[in-house]
Amino acid sequence: MRLLNTLPQTDEEHYALEVLEIDASVEHGITDDHLAETIPYCPNLQEAYLSGVYDLSDRTLILLGRETDDLRTLDISGCLHVSPIGLHDLAGLATRLQVLRLASVWGTTDPVLKTVLRALGHLTELDIADLPLVTAHSVREVWTFCRTLRVLNLSNCTNITDKAFPSPYADSAAQYPGRRSLVVPDLPAQSRTRTPSPEKPKLWIDDLPPLVLPSHHLLEQLHCIDVSHCQKLTDDAIAGLVQHVPRITELNMAGCTGLSKKVVHSLCTQGGTLLDLDLSEVQRLNDDGVFRLVRACPRLRHLGISYCTQLTDMSIMEVTSLEKLQHLAMAGLPKVTDNSIEFLAEHATVLAQLKISGCTRLSLEAVHRLLRRLKLERLEVSIPAMARPGTKRFSERAPSDWNRKTQGPYRIYRGGNIAALRAFLDKEDARKKDAEQRCIPFTPRADDSMNLY
Image (cartoon, rainbow, N blue to C red):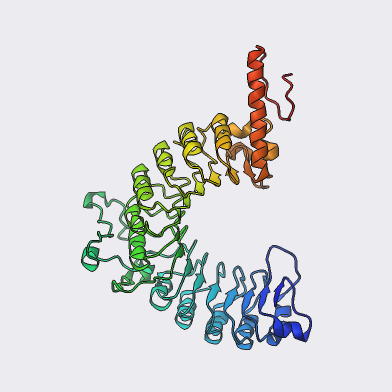
């Protein structure tokens, strides 16, 4: 039996309960005390999604591990009252856990995370996003003890460095005949200008040795990895990652500002399996890197290159050669013009979602041609050209913190509103042609009327 935002009331419901989900998006009134009274009578509970219980405590967490016989999934994301004590005891009690989500449980530290990873070696999904106290010292245990992982989320773990990942091979050609080396060569000595000051104190994490794994040590089931906004990562981390995870299908590296254009060489080795890739805010990515990536990864369905400010129309035109591309995020590209949008309209035939907000050089005419050609399901196009009267009424409502003066008009369309916007622009185009034929000055309208005055 499955319950959503409610607790079992009868003995039969307690015994039959297998899935309990307490959602954070609704008001349900369920507290930690209510859970502590209920859990001892639910021995068959297998999946517990408790992110909506804001005051969840160590007491309830320990009860959950002790009183349930076959707990397989636990989600306590955002439960700030959980301490390392509760997680430590849970790891020793709920030994059958396969899915563990600890995102934003800010009390999680390296010692308790190491204990959890060593005790729960058969995890298939691990979410440890947004843990500011976690470093490479504990995360590196994943590669040794969690060989059955399928999904790994390290997003916004800002203190993770390259030493959290396997060290890349010194000579991959010797390890795999016929396979080129993935190691990014060192920069020339003259380019190493940003060296730490000699007065800077040396931390214990700096003495952590590299994680050297044998070439046959592979996590073949791991296919989804999120390291977004881990700003201390460099190309070496990704090079070591792809060598020991040969079947990545989804990889999110958005906001990894420490990466350079050379990271593309590592990504190209995953071309046979890579489907979803997000490189947003990797500002050193250039057109040449996009060319290499597109040619090596023809199966890409989702691609994020937002705020990669070096990219030009050439990159977007190359991206259109991806025959299976359904989702393209290319917001905040100041060098992109109408040429690339028109090229998208003609060649990206299966594109369903497009983000072009912040591309300030785009015109309303290019957006109109795009709408005529493609059957989009979602379009984010917050650009100055969309300040035209009449386009706002089809858009979603702007959030309360949106500043029109600095961010421009808020324009996000989805579903039927995209067709309505296209029809409105078609009507305005017809009005403009009619006005030209009658030698009447054209005045844009915000309604659906065809009148010229």
